Image (cartoon, rainbow, N blue to C red; front, side):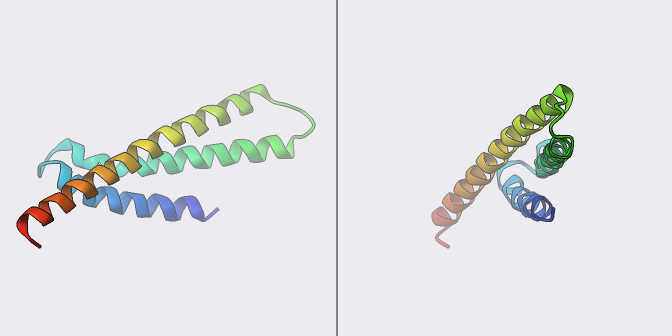
Amino acid sequence: AVFPWCYGAAFALLLSRAGGVLFAAGSRWRRVNLLPLVTLLADSVENACLYGMLTGYPDFADSIATLGGYATTLKHLTLLVAVGLMGTGGGVGLRGRLRRGG
């Protein structure tokens, strides 16, 4: 699956930009751009669990379903935080540009 890698890279780049606006130089919080890598990993685990359940049908493995559910939750939480930070960084950056007149 190529899509998770594409959005993971795009979100990492956007969060790098947002982190530069939101956090001071040298701050540990600037590493927030690694958050999409957690999202990517969770998405890959979710996909692997789904594949495992589909190939094992009609047998059902509770552990695979549970792991897939946790991976889905982690993916959505990290995605929510990432998109929120991108929006906040974009808003703060835009506000600064408008105040400077350019």
